[in-house]
Length: 319
Image (tube, rainbow, N blue to C red):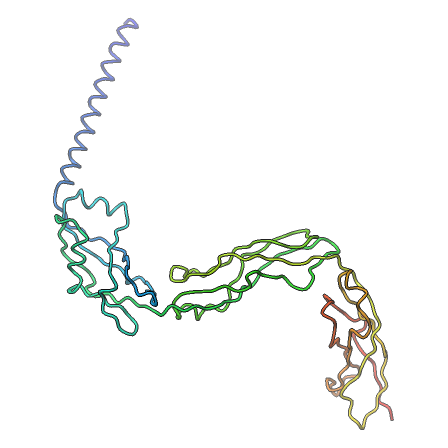
């Protein structure tokens, strides 16, 4: 067979296949159109769209706040409910209200439901026939922010005082039943490494998952903190032994301990022996104890951390 004949046969064969596929597609399309033109009865779950809720009230939605509506109409009109979540509007200015709930009752609100559908859609059934919408009074509550941080400073650097948050608290607005359970709001984790300059960063807040029923005055806060070079110092401080009974005299050693402290270079010269008080409490002794444990009971705010070079104070009872 020549090349010309082979191409001619192949062309007509492909044409036959294409024509066959075209008829199959047309047949399927005709079948679908025929079915969609028929009348069907189907039940759909409708989400509630609340309107005209009084300003001083907030509706608290739960899984019961939906309508199951059975519709009878052409298949064409059912299609949209499969692609877009169906909603039904409820006007709360028309509902009965008691101390805890707005009540939607089918026999009173049926006409409002019917008016939201085309004339050729027939409503066969609505379930449930009564829906109780729980509501609460809107409240405004100031809630403190709590910083969550993972900050690693460069060697020899540290934070002066504490981090500052601006704002350090935010307004939470919503149902009292929800706002009462919120005592603090944490920030998202602030992660910084090798820090040797002042901290200044904007960080988001971990807002409660129930934010649908709550609103917040802020969604983020600014974190700031002074960072300086730090150093370690040592200073001798006399020990005070307290709560020794009047009828007992003791002699103890050592009389002076070294306090090792960590502070910024700018504050280093302002630290003196009188900045600290170290005590040993006689009342803390058990009958078998032979030594006192020294404790730092006062230290300046300028100091970041402290420790003592001795852990015990030896003593003897005097006659």
